[in-house]
Image (cartoon, rainbow, N blue to C red; front, top):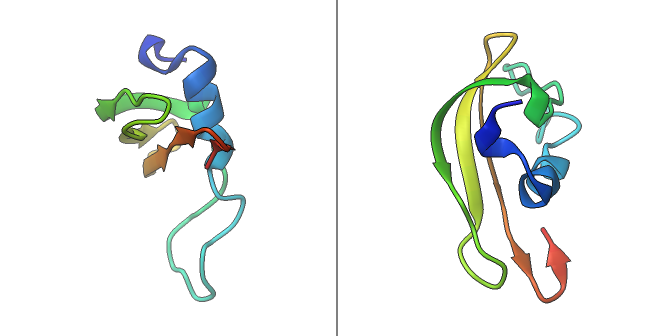
Length: 78
């Protein structure tokens, strides 16, 4: 795992990877992935509880590109 993605908060962010395509007819591979699958980060923003979201995008081990965004407020992660 890339050091930038270690820690509790990034673990929570990656729980929000969609388990399947978002809509019928999607023509890209939307297979689930985890932070261990990330081989290259192209952008990363550390979020804050009750503040800006955690955001990152990059390339996965299988060659796909990804983006993910999640936030945490007083009600939990989302």
